[in-house]
Amino acid sequence: MTFRIDVLTIFPEYLAPLGQSLLGKAAARGLVSVGVHDLRQWTDDVHRTVDDSPYGGGPGMVMRPEPWGRALEAVRPPGTRLVVPTPAGRPFTQAVAAGWATEPGLVFACGRYEGIDQRVADWAAEGGPVSEVSIGDYVLAGGESAVLVMVEAVTRLLPGVVGNAESVEFDSHADGLLEGPSYTRPATWRGREVPPVLLSGDHAAIARWRRAQSLRRTADRRPDLLAGLPDGALTPADRAA
Ligand code: ADE
Image 1 (cartoon, rainbow, N blue to C red):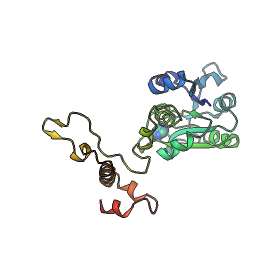
Image 2: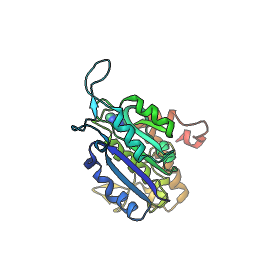
Image 3: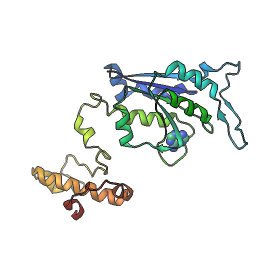
Image 4: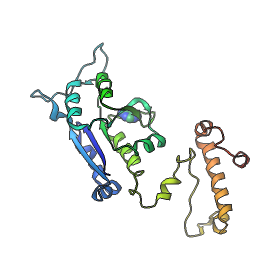
């Protein structure tokens, strides 16, 4: 099955990277297909207006609902998840990406300015799941770069897109922890040695060492992730590491 991605934006050129590298190859192999659509196609005035000032006052502009309603009716297959990137959304995580990768496809609605009139997401929820999501606690100028991030995170989880399924299985975040350090040849570089256990050939010892590194790095850089692990996720050996 081809995973279908549609993106609605007023800056279609911004999504040009979707045709490149990993995703371009996946598209060429029929695993993914991507459509990028200019929202202004669905405006109905000579100025092709997509925004207006906010009711209640305040800075910036809000995207008007009418073009969005027509665009979604034209582009969104019934039941397909609508993803609306917004700094006011729920966090986009590896677990969210893994869930979306099991669905038939996704439609992304890129807002600019102060966002999209809230009635669009509320109305769209009648036609299928709607996810308002943030890629991090910072404010971007619009949803386009967030869509590039989310599409990359989701598509590399689709069966067959990444050549080595193990490289996806052992990713940072796949088990709720950060991945530890990696090394390659030469064994000594500028006086720095590769940790000897990695050269030992003792696969059980290597697995234990990697797990300990992963736990230490997570404790140091992301204590919030350790605190959020479900009960039983850490073994007595983990706690000793
Ligand atoms: N649009 C603006 N900022 C954003 C963010 N942090 N995540 C997703 N979409 C956004």
